[in-house]
Image 1 (tube, rainbow over the protein chains, first blue to last red):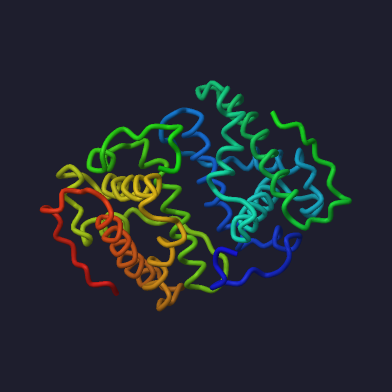
Image 2 (image 1 turned 45 degrees about the vertical axis):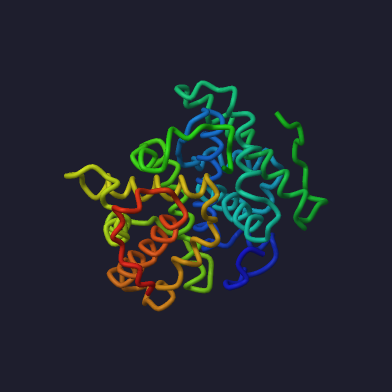
Length: 150
Length: 150
């Protein structure tokens, strides 16, 4: 892992519920999102990945089962953030590779149209989460993600 | 550079004034800060680097001259963010190395004491900016940074 100087609590399923890891993950995810927007727009750009997008992409990637039932989009967004942080710290994925995956659907959108941007970002994050899940030891039998890479 | 797929406007002095680059830099700086806090606290953590800290570290590193005169701490913070983003995109510094530099003064602080955290972060960002400036082609004659690494 990138930093053995601070311990991760546990394996990937439990880590995905770790709120401290989600705090770090918030920054990892926002950098990936900003870099993806920069690639898609062909100029430096920044933005915060919305919880609506992160929660929907978790469901679309077939990883909703990692979160507790009856939680809101903020908590689901935290789970996405914790998963991405864990994968990055464990060197299963790099920021640059993640941004390239996310930039693909974003490259087609009108950035003035927020709905269009969010929908493309949902697809991009879904693809990122599927890529991560293929490299991690989540309980495979429970995966049911749509692997169609848009 | 990391992404040749989107162009940087210009050399490092002009880039430091680029507001789009500062938007991307905001995310780079926050990830470095969060990772540094994680290392210092020995557990995952997240946080936003305050403009007060970023603007003071720019002055302490002897790089205040890169910003226009009579601008506020937000604009000075933008300059720090743009410099860090530029250095990262140009592969002069990695996120992991930056976080280790920043974590050193943070490792001694009481995280319940905001003033203490900010002062340590100022020293850490100053050291990061000095490291970056040594690897970039800023106008060296105008550098007057205090190189004392705390």
